[in-house]
Length: 206
Ligand SMILES: [Zn+2]
Image 1 (cartoon, rainbow, N blue to C red):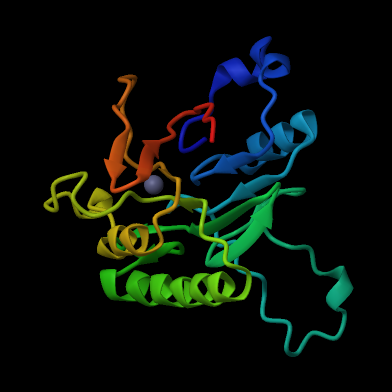
Image 2 (cartoon, rainbow, N blue to C red; image 1 turned 90 degrees about the vertical axis):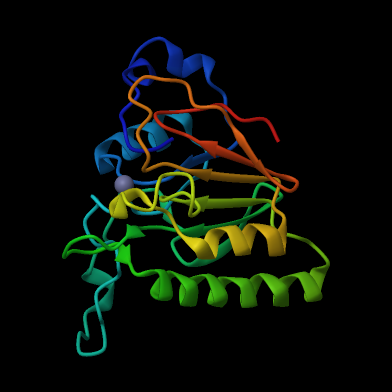
């Protein structure tokens, strides 16, 4: 899911949806994610979008009372921004944020996102060497560069994502950020990777 609250999930549809895993691509209210994770009772992994508050953990260096500082972000959900995690037999990597277009958290220049992607790529490579397993799902807020005309700076997407996808060939890349405004957008394909704009929500079989 991404960007827009799917009202049907507050109603009768939710009990029919039996996912093994929920992925949020960002820019969703934290209480919506908390509602979903508590009702569905399966792991919910998320990356922040450009409209989300900072979910960086506070710098605890000078704070002795560590256990009393709550983790920012939706309760019960796992922030996978800049991380590689294994959930339900899947290897999932996350990169939140959009192309920088104003002040605020969760925005990056192409060079900054490139560094984040290189860092996640290093970890993916090391894990693959160790256990022979590849990346299954890449979760991002913004799309890869080129989906939207580059003149639309806020929605242009990241060059680094295309490279990451070509290098690691996940089964699936899910993102949000580019609003379809009610239209159903066609899924895309980069090599073997299915690329899906998840706004507002999609059920995906892997
Ligand atoms: Zn966005």
